[in-house]
Image 1 (cartoon, rainbow, N blue to C red):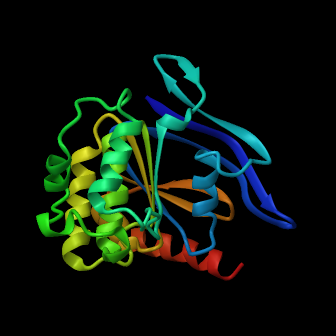
Image 2 (image 1 turned 180 degrees about the vertical axis):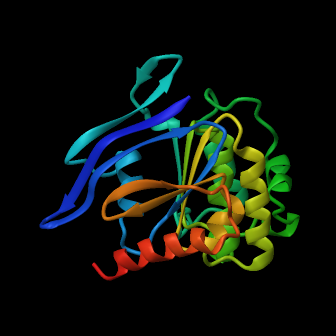
Length: 235
């Protein structure tokens, strides 16, 4: 399965954020979407998630020569700032999600099995979500997307503000989940993208460019990315 984007464009008033985005993402890989803050990474995600309208172009799944539009259930979206119902406990939130998606969840597990999977301690499971740390809220947001098993998982800088231990747990989890889906990981931190991702895609001047990752440690490789990011910063 592939996600194909063709000539996608999006502007805000006079600012052209996405100019002519064309790219093909393959299932089974984690793609690092690298760009400066303000380069348009979140705008691209919001277009793919259909939270905002595009000004032109198209995107679709392609499998065995057949094309189809993305449906709501195809897309999982993990925000950099976790959005969870803080008036519920972790257990209540997870039960609610499991209940309303009962017919679509494949191979459901018990609530405590899911908590165990995400290393959420027993004493935290019945706390209000408003009392969760940022990292724990992020884990809950990630958990519901794992349960839903979307074909496309969009991750908008979800590790940037996490402590070292939680960030490493999340990276290991993402690596274990990449088969059978397309994962796009947005970040402005180059070393994080190089560590986690199979492919690097640079959002520069409103367009996507694949960056050769064959020699990760080469000075020329990193200088090319840094130069492109500086161009975005100076626009």
